[in-house]
Length: 387
Ligand SMILES: *Cc1c(COP(=O)(O)O)cnc(C)c1O
Picture 1 (cartoon, rainbow, N blue to C red):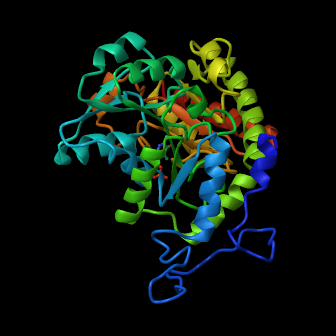
Picture 2 (picture 1 turned 180 degrees about the vertical axis):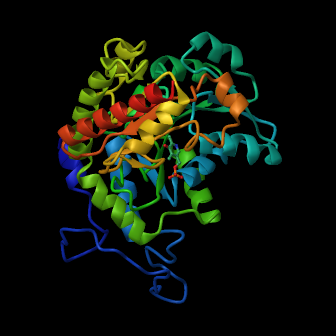
């Protein structure tokens, strides 16, 4: 079956005789056992639940993996993979990465004796120089968010493996419809399923996917031991969302391309970050490892005040930190999703204060363009009045 068909046809609950067309929600904490010695396939939902298991099998299969574990959030999934690292070992991470991940690596893990190094992972020489004998895990995102810099996944995987470390890719930005890092050499793929996979802004969820039996065993152990598994109802919401993943991403990406082109020729926009534009520095590299540029476009206006007014002037784009949902959203990453990165570090990593990020939803693109046109007019008109 082709990918889009597999999205619609998740597997069935083991042993279900009724062939339901929607996976049932096993909203139960416990499962009665066959006898005093146990013996049931499931016993307790923290350790295993049929609804979650259907989702996990589907996510593994979509990714070209053999095992997936679903977590209560993307951060829970990311935390689980850091459990593969022991005290004294180090994590090497991309310097332009999700703010919550930065917070986890710098404010939680050091107390466990695990330190993180940050490097521009688009620079292979810098990655090679930053790898140390103690580096156990390398964590990257590509395209990075919000600046959309492209990491050469095949090359980074080769380097990381030469050092005997594991490569994890946070693939939240694109979803498996557009990029499947295991096929490019990654050992682990991590998702915030809150974004594209669930897709409707109504569930918080995460996932870890791998082909490596030993890694999978450890992740499953941690998921149960730390009690971070995804609940049955949320598992069902993600299963429901995944069915329309390709349709949603394809529609939103089509609109995102139009919006990126519109912004690129607009006189009040100084710079557009979108891997789909031929002028983007990583355009060709991205095309060599992914099937599309995705649904998020970032741009600069040259002035923080103007960007702020622009965001405030939008009527259809809601001001929200997330992406990957059916509704379009707009934000100032420096002030919102990446606010957990200290200002000095943000400046160091060249995250411009006037950066605006739009997450394109599945609305009619004409309405989205009209909203941005209006917001750009409003924001620049007021600048002129002031000066
Ligand atoms: C949102 C996000 C996360 C965190 O996921 P939650 O579901 O919010 O916990 C991690 N990585 C990336 C790239 C994200 O966009």
